[in-house]
Every structure is written in C-alpha cells, then in structure tokens.
Amino acid sequence: MKIFSALYQWTMRWATHTAAPKVLAVLSFAESVFFPIPPDVLLAPMVLSKPEHAWRLAGITTLGSVLGGVVGYFLGYWLFEPVIKPLLIDFNYMGKFEHAMQWFQQYGVWVVFIAGFSPIPYKVFTLSAGFLQMLFLPFLLASAVGRGMRFYLVAALIKAGGAKMEHKLRNSVDAIGWGVVILAAILYVVFG
Image (cartoon, rainbow, N blue to C red):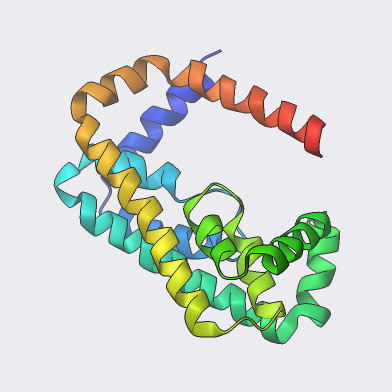
C-alpha cells in the first residue's frame, strides 16, 4: 500500500509554498509545547526543495522551537497544577512526566540538552523544567544548543544528500514509513 508515497509527494509540493517557512515556525513552536509531530518532517522536504535556504530554514525551526520551549517552561512554572497536570493525566503523559522528573534529578540541565537534540519528547522536559523551577538561563541555553544542533544537523544532512538522496528517499518512502509504523507499534507494546 503506497500511502506514504502520496503523502511524500504532497509534502514535497507543499514545501515550496510561499507560506511554508511560516508554517514551519508555527509547527516548531507548537511541537515544543503540545503538538506530537516533530518539525523535522517539514524541515527535511523544505531543505530538499530549496537547499540554498537550508541554514535559514534550520534557524527558523530552531527559533520557533526554543520560543515554544520557553512557553512550555512558563506553563510548567505557573500553570502546572490547574492546567497542565489534568492534561497530562487526560493524555496519559503523566508516566512520561514522572520519568522526566527522575531524569532531571539525575542529570540536571543536561537532560534539557539531550531532549532538545534527541527524538525524546522535548515538550515534556520544557514543562518539567518550569515545574521544577529550573534556572531559566541554563534552560534557555541548553534548549537553544540542543535544538539548534539537531535542526542544523538535519538541514546539513539533507542538503549534503541533495537530489541523489531525494531520489532514493522517494523510491523507498513506503518501506521506511511502514517500518516506522511497525517500530512505533512494537515500542508502544513494549514500553506502553
């Protein structure tokens, strides 16, 4: 079933739209607070379609993500009990939040950097940092460095791969897509 091929073609067409950078900024911001889809899924095709704008797009993604992280931090700082905690419970994220709290106790500010760079849900750590009233400046610095490294690395890899990589990706996008779905299902069963 070629669901992912059609989605890939739609995304590649959309990545050239004049509003795409604005949508990328909004997606990056939202992902750092509540949205489940990482901005990499829009950053990558945008860099593929306009490699000459790779660094600007990585900058937009980083800035949007860090600003979203700041909002997440202050939501955790000021509104955890009345707003955030009920939402975490409703969306079954409380276990992830408690796990993040343990990581904070163990690793301190480094956990924000790790969450910013890795595919770990960054939003959980922004809220946790605020709830724990972590010093804001180290939080901001760790967020900016971690998110920046991640998005500039994605942009650099996509730009370096260029048209050759785009051709290979287009030919194998369905296999990759179904592999990710199967892996996510397995991880959910094992860790969920």
